[in-house]
Image 1 (cartoon, rainbow, N blue to C red):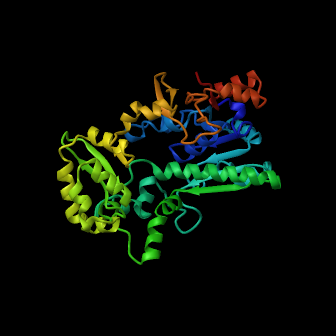
Image 2: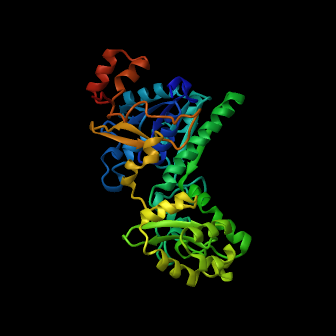
Image 3: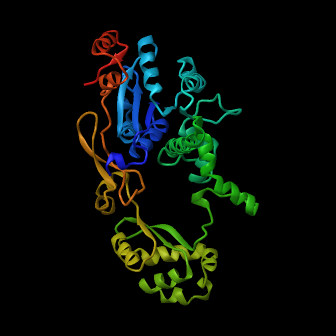
Length: 396
């Protein structure tokens, strides 16, 4: 989709972010057309250098952005940041509470300079008794009930991705969008706050409300009583695994016919879904034995042919070869900062029948420093002096 057709084309965002939460907010806005300027320290965002499970953070959440490298501790670097902010619609940050205030880049200070500014803060907690704590995704998963619900009883387990960081950034972007809409009516900006803990509580709210409605505490997902008779992972004869679901009486009849289970279809103890839920203790071992002779591929074919819910158990790296993602443009070419080529998932939405795509690759440190400073009114001589003073970094 051409940039001029994207909904936030013409909106300028200056972000002071690192890791996942803040960069996600900027990525969402950038994918939707905003000009997002990533302000990095002279040494670059530390996220660029993470190993292990953090190695993909920078590449994933910093596409469609520009990079300017500034030393905010030096007057020249801070002045350059203020000049950029003066032209911005949105400032986004996810540093520890108090950090931006120490730099003189907090909302109270900046809003006096630009009353139309929208300021998005991504924090561990919204204001309250916990807001002084340092939070991480795993911290709030543990204290917010998600790890309890994900793991087996007595074995709390974090979810397998940075769910609160990513969704917290998304809610920051949603808040920014709401503030932009309100600014159209009032002419004034405002502060938007998003937080990991409150995001996590939103995720587990269905389990809170389950207790409110039934008076019974929700069991962790591996130990829960499923609402459906068949809703499980099956290990079959090739050692493969597949998730199979039968969630209605109509599907039960189709399932039995498709897999020659006429005796189970006729069994009055299994007539309804609730009957099958009550019979799971003896039904599931029986079904596992009956299906063990099939391969995962055979079961996939049967379930797909008959419109029954199923899913292969897929590793993240296998998704690069997923025919649906490759056939629908869900993966876009991406050049990593070190020059290697890969592909990356796009936003999970379509606008006018198209997925918002990659318009620019994750930037090198300070890649756009010179161009952005010129745009802010600095002369080449001033820029050269700032570079020599190490107040800014001119990227390659």
